[in-house]
Length: 483
Image 1 (cartoon, helix red, strand yellow):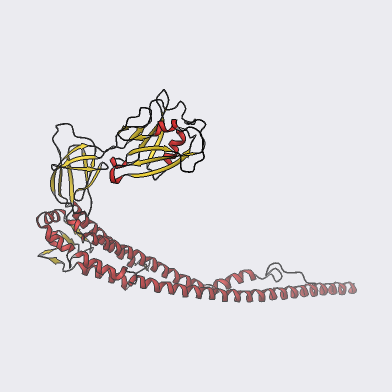
Image 2: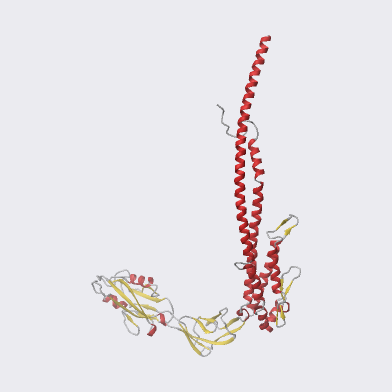
């Protein structure tokens, strides 16, 4: 019986394992070529994504230059400390001066139950009562008043009632307990300021059909409330909920909160404190804010220059390493660069050009350069025509965004190219798998042949050893006979 061979080459003494590895390396050469090609295609796909992002950034910056608020922005300057002002972007705020007096701040209603309501906040108010009671709230006054009801146990404690009020999001009030040294009081606070957010009535009643027993009058004494009435033991408003009031340009304006929106077009006033009696009104000066336009111009220039750098990086070629970047020699990247430049060439409006307002091209780098002084002077002296240059029907914004869309839209040139790369990558993947399967089959054939060779050589080595031994014995026998 022959001995099993655990490792190829053991029987023959030949380096068959090494030979198999060398054969696999040789067979794997097509796989390496396919992987190299796939890596290049993946790099191109990623590079197109980088190019798209850079073009999108230019388009976004150009879009900002096409908005009216960019060239009609105003800023707020407040004298005094009774209010602050915020100008809302794109709101149409108009330059001008306004006189403002803060007469009254909006407050949130706070209510408290009577002196020494109960001795312990966690014990039943109506001792021995069973069943449930409804706490009926009226919020607001007049036609705007609303009703809300919540149910609690008839033997609820003030703590239970406070939790039920706070947990009811629809009521929009919070409640807690306060110990004044003589007993616990129920404190109910509105979550919002203004007269419309005040409790004007509270009643405690058993719901229809309730079969509970016991006296709930103590609970009613503590909680029942009607605005304008006096109940020493019951609820009372310790802080009135009231609207804010300001006099703007001699006209009284009220608000539920301390934020006044729309009283002055495009401006939000935040009231901080009431004006001192007899004090002069504070003022709000709304003036042109050309910094918004200069910022938008500089953002566009930065995005445009970043695109130039991106294209240069993606299409470069390293002579020393003799290796190109992902899009080296790619016509699409160069086309994008060319069309973006064309969108700026010949741009003019009413005699103004980019160079005349301080935006020029560095012919060495292709980047845009901004002369801030020249740009600011143009905005100050000729803002209407500057706006036309950027935001007009044939202005920079529309020309650049149109040029960008050719490349960046959902069925644009970049997406089409990326789709083609994805198809190529799928084909390469299929080729790689098929080639790898073929190589594996071939290597298995080699392995079986080597196993057979190794076994055969082992047998031949065994025969050779046997014959050598026999010949040696014959030679020894012959030598003995001669003696």
